[in-house]
Length: 408
Image 1 (tube, rainbow, N blue to C red):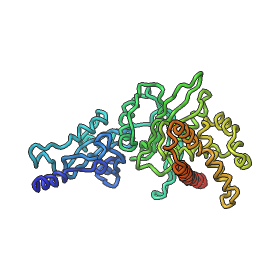
Image 2 (cartoon, one colour):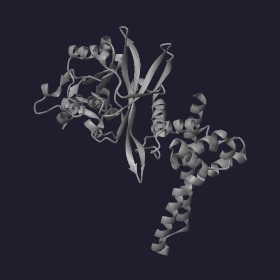
Image 3 (cartoon, rainbow, N blue to C red):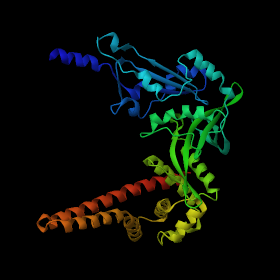
Image 4 (cartoon, helix red, strand yellow):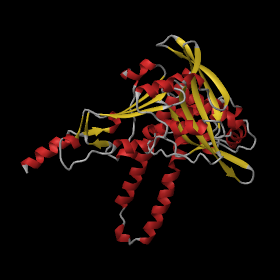
């Protein structure tokens, strides 16, 4: 038993956390290849390596996935200090290379010389599609302005299908439930963000992020665009590109008369916060959201105006109203604070009332002796606690949006 324990300890040394072992990099210059400070790691790797996110069989494992900054031409190689196969009989290491090959398209290289050749061709790479928006961001560290472009592309753009196959590999590492899409379906729209930069006197472009949107048919003659995936690559996060992209995409669909409204598929908490910010920014100057009307409560006018002018549905319009009313409410005034709190809780209590009705139906089916007033009171107290907790969480989220709007 002691010998087995010693063997287990030895084998445990060959377990590697795949989120740490995977090294991603966006490369512009040849010297970037060896610059370890430019690498970044995945947030997730469970789709390839299981829920434990562990690869067995290696010490000092490095799974290098380096991409040229613009075209995303790829270098893939697996490095390690030692492998379990070399030390123990009948023990096999995980086939890490095959797992990675499942998600990256063909055409990658495995050596530095070939990758340098890819970099030399970057001068020929140009953004796909039509330019929708150009903006600048001031970089404090560099002390200069950087220029970005947002484009709309489709699968008919020469070279875009192959580019998209490389781009979507990042989804596996940064979106928990990511999946690849069917690019042959012409209802997909693709929106891309690129940074312009200089190299040896030439203007080149680096991939910053992207969004995919699926256009659903709505009877009889409308379309409902639904955001499927959105990702700003880690080196560019925290610079406002997500807001620029979402607002640009929203404005693009606003201009189309056949669009009903715009939604998102299973949005993450971070996406909901981003959407709150963008929609409040778009809506804040609409007449229906004047301070006087905000204090009268959520209205049909708000639903109609936001839908007709900005393609925003009723649910999202309600959140916009609640955020703008918070901004317009003096919470140090007890009466105004109470009025706001009751208005929000009136909406939040809806699901609890539904549960209460369902519970009442269940009680009618149970024997009287199975029910007690004490249990009824516990149910009611629990609901009040959950309602208050939901309210406080919501207000905290709304305050962050209000603060961001104030800083914009």
